[in-house]
Length: 219
Image 1 (spheres, rainbow, N blue to C red):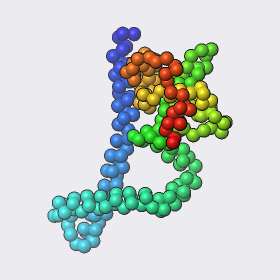
Image 2: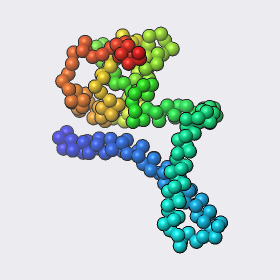
Image 3: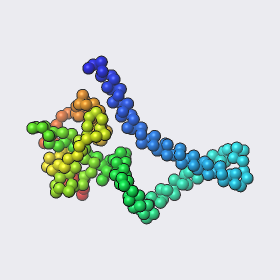
Image 4: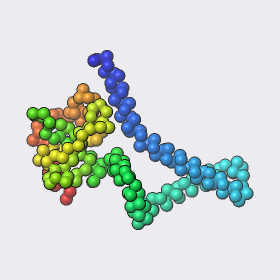
């Protein structure tokens, strides 16, 4: 086991790096793709008016940057208008669009409001004990006073189970984050949750009940 410890540590750290890098890579690829399209457009415009782009490289580059920034401004402005809402209403008719949008929202750097991901403890499925899971939404389930809790698999967290749990059986670990839970799953329990969040183990009574958390944060 000790011989495998460095390999496990390397694998876990590499996976965390992958999850952290993916949003950045996607944004960079999108920017490069958009820049390439604008570059082709400016090249075409130069040739249309009789300029040779190769002889005006600085002007070409400057114009591409100006058009790119202006396009981003237009897109950002449209996101605040009714047009954005109209386009989104059309996209929501595509099967799976809303689900994909919600999943992307989970990995948003902002974990506040409706998009906040809570790390919670719920009564276990053995005779005794508790399980650590995630609440991706604080909206009440179809069953009154119940909320949806997801228990992910270990060490590959892209699968798991969803449960509708009564609010009196849900305790919020308010010092923990989505990333802490991911590290816990990847460690397969080799590292305790207390080690991961760097705090001393607490009695259950010191954790925050979901009802208390909702009262504090939904005023």
